[in-house]
Length: 422
Ligand code: NAI
Image (tube, rainbow, N blue to C red):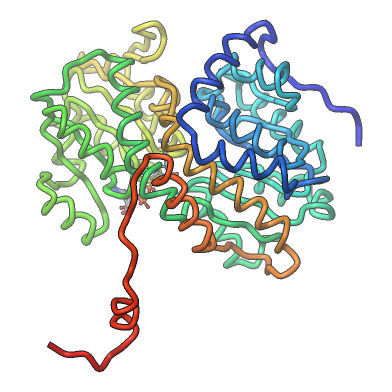
């Protein structure tokens, strides 16, 4: 293996990055405990890991934990706009982690960075959106000789991987970290809920109270954003394609309608579907003057940006470059936040550390699980073992000083019997 050199924007930013990484770590008590355990037990000893994640302060703390567990880590970005250059600098200078990430990298550089991380010739991959797995399976199949397994962070990545497994194309086992209850119930709902609103407020500084706020997709992320927008006084409208979720949104008190009905009413539209073309040519002519559109789903294809551009006569950057203003042929102005990329990462700092504590505890423990169990696993997508989920919830509760009741012997017996009636 050649000697690898990090590719980052500015090593001089390290002290600012370290300060922020340490701040985040204070809010990550579960990961702190796992770090202490990993230092002692070395569950990843001798393993090389290629990790493709949003390069934020929380990810830096995960990388520290993996290294403490004995792994050699190469980190690249899972999204060019979420990369925090000060964090990259500190990871390289203070923690000896290989980093291939620059904020604002273009498409070529983005893939060069993924390949840079893969040059470590990993035993384990860790993804947020399955881009590393895709590159390995398409362009760098020779790496399959050393890879023993991987983990995946997000809904969109898990969907891709399950499709690969169904087609028999997946060449190594992967744990779907997103499926852990201690991940999606908290990260997708409360993390995306708070940080998406945070991104919109930082980008626009517009009062949400009294505005019509359209949430496309009432999944784990959409539920979080809808409830937070409602809490700030917005009139929330939900669009869905799934009748059960649409019904749930209705009974949760939201107005449900089609995007074509919602577009003329919306002051804000936020897409969180994991699907493409949620706002496209069908809706662009209907959006009202001044509407702000943003995406918090994984990929930047939820809003058809080429269609928006084609329908406009002028485009300029406003608010320090975080928003594009499109002038439409009829004079309407439409605003797009953060180039249609995950708004909570493009315009804010991503999820709060307290939430990523649980998501990344899952990543750390599932990597250790994979290192131990890979020989017993098939080339498919696995759920997070229940014991890991329960352990993380228990550690998190303990860190919050919360005790819960325990079953009495009579209750245990009752729950395991069928003879008891009224
Ligand atoms: P989910 O599967 O729970 O929810 C997605 C919802 O969108 C479903 O209810 C589905 O019926 C709906 N949907 C699909 N096509 C639609 C359409 N054409 N119109 C309206 N609704 C439609 O997924 P989850 O966990 O909520 O994730 C959503 C997206 O957000 C994924 O891309 C995921 O990777 C991403 N994500 C983003 C995060 C962030 O930090 N911004 C954090 C976690 C996940």
